[in-house]
Image 1 (cartoon, rainbow, N blue to C red):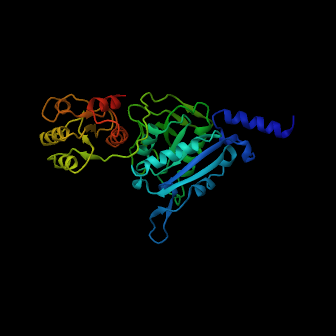
Image 2: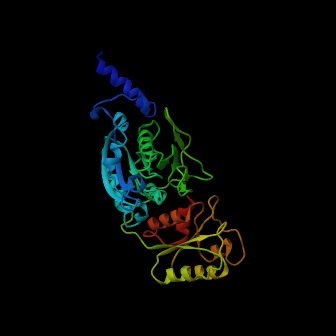
Image 3: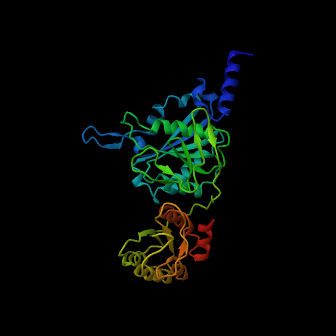
Length: 355
């Protein structure tokens, strides 16, 4: 047995033990598992502009990979530059193309999975869109950063390394699209951003995390049982999001219905409650043929048709509204975006939200 054979055997056993980066040995790129990285921009790719001293897009995906030398020890990385934008610019006009791009890189039989680099403001929304539309069972991990690359303690490099380790870990397939920051693995459907600046920002509320990328290995604790996959539609319909607030008069709902929205998501209070003027506006929209989906702005719990006062969830259901369950208003809109080209039937839509 040659030294080279021994080295490769050791390295293979290390990678099999859930991506143990700290013990991985240098190897030729051809010996390493292949991981795709799709760069879209975000704070992870930003640095301070010398003139304004404010973070702006500056780094490519290749730059970000080069800043994490340990990646070369565990994977052969292939970078795709999709965009370099703040995630506030990401939305329905780009999501279908991103889904097709990720699906294309996963089609390579040598690719073990894909990391999508993304800003944190809409990261959970993009993750859910991909989770609903990607057909591949290979792991897809979305990562970003709360601190830009100019910060002395930038969190982007660690998050990128952990994402690749997760993809190479035993049991990583079949978990759906995940959001993995600050070592914690969250399911795309359940995760949301909860803090503007803290690195521990992505949480999954009642559902809890899927696992943890630890120093020695990746530990998976559970799988999400609420996943579903829908065909990627040929077009993205217009779905408006309207918030309930104290004193709302329903004019925003009426405007959305009358100006071309194909569905409306209402960010309601509590179990899914609004006031009387909003009730009347929602009822009128449904009668006009515009589906209305009621979600709750409360972080944990579900939107349910419980209360019987005018504007309570029970009266909204009688008016024909659909209830989003535990989906956030943003994610309720995403499910509607994908479902609406296929149906506007309230019962069919409710069945999708109940899955």
